[in-house]
Length: 109
Image (cartoon, rainbow, N blue to C red; front, top):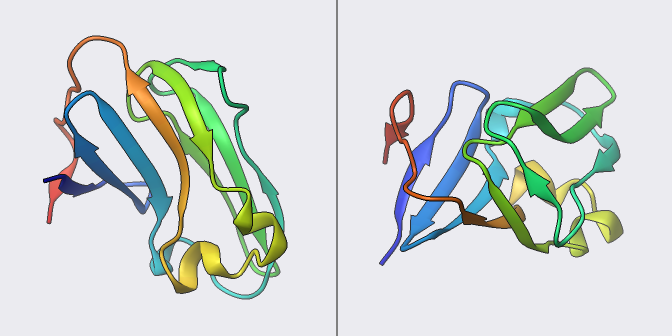
């Protein structure tokens, strides 16, 4: 069973074993989504470095990698219906963690 955490960037993270699933909460953006940029599968992310950009009519959010690791999957359905990013809390990408996840600074569900 996964644990769910929230970051100060308004991202949600489901942690299960050595894998994270990352998405955005409804509070992260307001208005219609107009642009999404996700990391590529196989891409290595460094903790604290920007890896996702989501822009709405009223705001833009850059999500930083919550941990270092390798992207194993992206949710391509968000490109077909971008508003699902926040209205349904759709996941954005999955990440295999390098080492152990440091959850300090995250708030648990």
